[in-house]
Length: 510
Picture 1 (cartoon, rainbow, N blue to C red):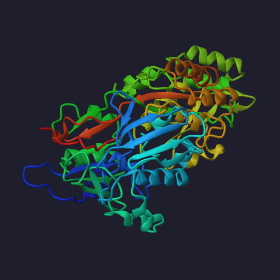
Picture 2 (tube, rainbow, N blue to C red; picture 1 turned 30 degrees about the vertical axis):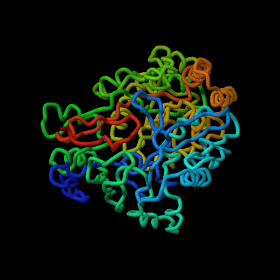
Picture 3 (cartoon, one colour; picture 1 turned 90 degrees about the horizontal axis):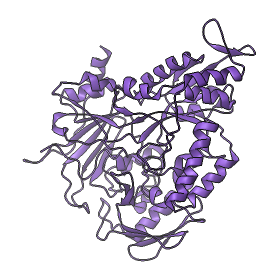
Picture 4 (cartoon, helix red, strand yellow; picture 1 turned 120 degrees about the horizontal axis):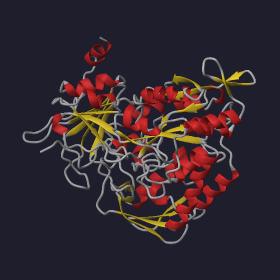
């Protein structure tokens, strides 16, 4: 009854109607709500739904290549020449030239925590009608990947944004202002939906769809039912259980991205017992059956996690192991003795840990339950605590011991540096687990300034040795191949590992 009630409340918004002979507007349902049109705070959403673009983009092979840029050239270790494609405009008709790109990048570097974290101390200068020079304070091998990061440099019309003189909820007034460059322009945003219409002046040609509607629906089953009942074309962030439930049906299809690139990470809070002891963290990691999580719990729709990084990348080292016997030995050596109920204890303290999850990613619950059962076999008492805002909860060291998060150790762009620098380095802006390791700090600094592939791989091998084996600062539960439930009209849709759900190429099957 709850599912039916949730679906009954689902009324999809309308985009511009389709002309005779062309596809209908694409209808998407998703669990995450776009809260604002603020391009600094919420700009990362808009490349995902075809509204915004970045200077570079993630390619199907996992590398990066030009998007709004025609070329990216490294003049020397600290200077990069960004040359734009000619003839591009924002959706409001204003030209996308060097002045506009420099304004966007400068504003992001001034106001965006993501840009500041990725490229601190970086300057931008106009050096031609279509050319901008980016200068980093030290050699930085991550620049091409950062330019492809949706959270760092979504390109927008700074003049239009600042002219609106908007703050907070007022950014919704930017709907209809055509501030981005993508094939679909935002026409409205409210608490229920984001609506986009085709931008006929798009630099890549006439977009194939008349529009896109993105509806925010928290209940996962309601999203799937919307597709089954013909009320939506694509449902995002669907639970893996949908794969088996939809087998043999003709009204909806379960599709996944070609490879698992999104890591389900489990960072540990090293500032709080019992995970202030590396032996306990290592035991926790060794006690997990990663193959079972991917093949049994996730029904084969996830890839097995054998490394800190997705195994499709050549720098990934397969050093994450399952070894319950070794896990028990480590706990024995550390003084944790099994009690009558199977839970270990030491000096009167039970081996209890709080594992955080969050509801927007429905697969986390079955994964967490499986991890809980597996670790009970070696003496852990794992409490699963689902929280609405996991990032805010992690900022309270007393509230958690471990967390299960879809975060991407290569940050969706194929770069290993960003996660390392932000989550595992002393003072990192997302290092909520309190990791402090001087060697890891040094390796991170060397990695970002190293451009040669063999040397980078050597540094990354040592990073993984520390993070996974020696200190066990995190474990990776599984590798997600991004799943989508699609209507028959979108049976050929290929889900994106880099979260580009709508692109210029998106269209129904012929």
